[in-house]
Length: 401
Image (cartoon, rainbow, N blue to C red; front, top):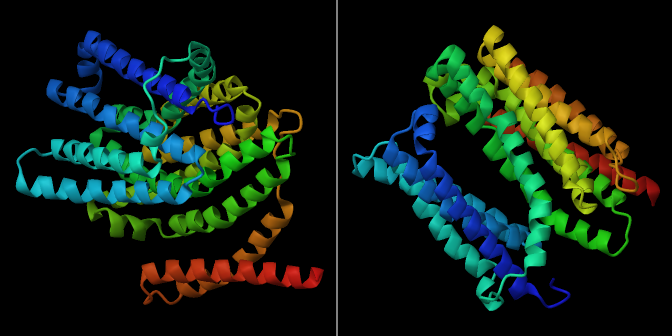
């Protein structure tokens, strides 16, 4: 659309689609409001506050996609971090100065996201090319054909990552669900945001290369090597120091959440990794394949959660989530499209494995010198790992020259 100078018409169509979706959501929410009240055990007023909150969230999602298309990962990262910090600061301020209780968090989210929306509008310079034009219905049709499978896949992803809270509260009560919520909050939102930085920067370039008839498999393979280089040590450190992380960022009352932190950390790793292995379906405009994989993994995950949580409690949440995300990743590797399949970056993986040797030796040393602060140990382990990797990489380059 940019090449054909049709951005205003395309953006008008997107905005209309967003407005129709939000309006439909409000109509359905009103018609089935009593079902929502009963199922989620949520007060009437709070339910509609959440619905209103979805409006700025939806606008933010659209603006983030525009930033992604414009290849502005730094703007995306700054906006995301600012959003999180502002939400926390406002929530604390409102809770301390009002009697709104839990609603304070929703109010803080609304204010912070609305402010971020305004900032994003200027970052992506939307006003310079947005015009109110008649929607292009052929484009609208294509968006629905492409988008509906992604929406179904998103619901399946919710089943993979969120359904466990309902199941664990059914068998073990809300206290256990709270432990799962703490472990989830310390892994998925933090790690997925960190891992998205590479993805946001890379995907528009991959799409451009594919449209230019360039073989994108080498670049995707190289990017997965970078992804493992950055993400794997972080996940390993979080797993080794799960108890300390919960104590630092949560509360001693939630100490048991450390049990499932490693499982959820590695689950986030595999789930983020599939962004690269499923890229083939988006490039070939066959998102229905990804939908089928996510739906299958979602159904499998719900069933596995039910069985394992019933028998093992919250540890079952961690095991089921990890197995489900590994299954989704493996399926996306096995089901290949011609000339788009993922190539394993063996050289990068071998260097990463070697870099973990000094990492492991240092951790073994720390095991007998516990007087060193946990946060210092974590930082030193990461520094040693990255320095080792780049030293190995430097030696390899020297040998070639």
